[in-house]
Image (cartoon, rainbow, N blue to C red; front, side, top):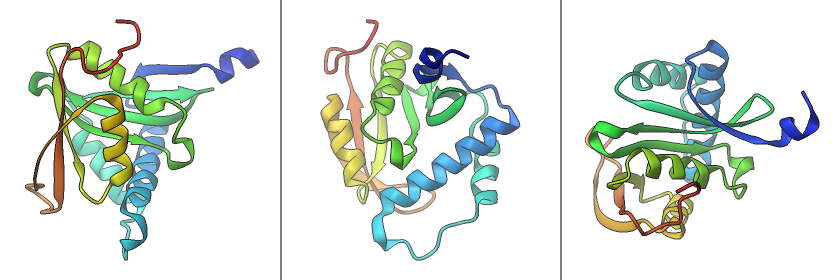
Length: 165
């Protein structure tokens, strides 16, 4: 592999391989911890996150990965039939490299009529990211399974620059 290929960001659908499964569970766990800040007293072991990958990254969900040199750095799970981005996680030490933006560009191309997502109210970094991308802030509610407070965001055509569009 040439150095230029190693440095090039690649976006692709999840293959479901054991290696990707493990990498995505690790990214999810690290990003979740970083988003919670110092208020986390307990973090589930990686096996918990692997089980969630197995349960939640299945059809009709589409999983897209951003990677460099074969190393996954970020991922997004979306449900196009519901116009919903269910998850977007970037490895914390990779923030600011455009990975989340590139994945959201995929969502805009796949769901051109618009889409929505939720982010934890405790995740101020995530909220700022979505606002910079051009999403409209909506109502605050509680996650139906965890009871944690979250804020809705919505993307409508024309509210963000989409690469390749």
